[in-house]
Image (cartoon, rainbow, N blue to C red):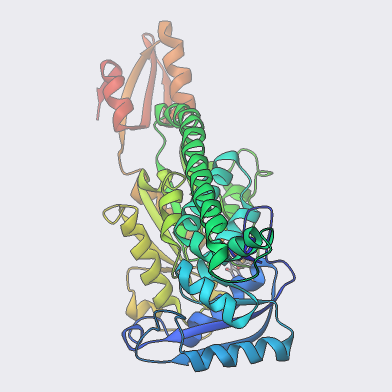
Length: 440
Ligand SMILES: Nc1nc2c(ncn2[C@@H]2O[C@H](COP(=O)(O)OP(=O)(O)OP(=O)(O)O)[C@@H](O)[C@H]2O)c(=O)[nH]1
Ligand SMILES: [Mg+2]
């Protein structure tokens, strides 16, 4: 039982029958509503593949150090498990190793917490090598301080071979095992970090290549299920060289777990890199935020953040707050950003524009107002363009082909000396090609 308490990547909570337990303490009240939070936990548990048999909430002023919830509630949870034939109890808040052990012993079923569920989903969905390594790193870091919770079950196993039954006599081998596990995890953490460094080096090479191309980066950010990938696909379908390269979109939490970059092209040779990112969720495990900072590098380097908000979700204000909090944690609070309220096809009457006059309402699914979004993005990232007149001597044909590729030629005339152009170029190019400029 113990080994399963913290899920490894090869185990999961698929098809288990779970009881969810929430704790509503006074300091919590001005945060997220407990019912909303439990509803979200239910969604997370479904996303991880388990069934939710019952949701229990305790309102209490203080946390019980030993069991998190009160002793009486522990009994109730135990009865509920028997009643529903549940084999898993999931707490909405992070538990310590000791609390896990105590609860597990008292309730006699596996006990995990919300963080373990989120880690489990991430472990199952991560696809790239870097994604997998990062999730495992977060998992190992999560396991380490909770080995006591595991240690108990392990010591029972260890002690049984001694034949002395339950009790203090089991401690010896258990603690040795605990120490061994601790060392094993620490070793693995070191190894993962080393592997991640390797992967990172490769990524940096790729990024540098991209940076060399000078393309602006626009990152889609927002709460999970807001429609970021759908927005991405809209652009891939309309403005990408290869419309085949759509990303996965689905009505479930954490459909996207890895950052995806696509080159999006607008008329006049104006291109940008659009980045689809992992969605955020309330109580996102800190280790995971840490781990994903690396894959969120595109976000930290973005020229513009397009914050996608699900207008059809009543709790969008909370979702905006959570997203902004995480963005702050990864250090991008100063990047220019725009609010885009998505799924307006699902809202009839709204006051969004009164509350957020600067925002845009769209439906990525139906394409409503997406041309407005294009305008906003262009205005933000292509404002470093200017129109100039150039004269390119016929001997410099390579410059002309460069401009054909990279700039927006508005007018073209052939004179005796060479080609005279009216052309919209980036400031960078206008500097580089200064000697050809004959008028601005
Ligand atoms: N009605 C409606 N549904 C939408 C719209 N945009 C997206 N959806 C749906 O919302 C669900 C989630 O969309 P995704 O694009 O996967 O959301 P996401 O923000 O990428 O979610 P994660 O990757 O989980 O963070 C899907 O079922 C979409 O079809 C929209 O404009 N209107
Ligand atoms: Mg997505």
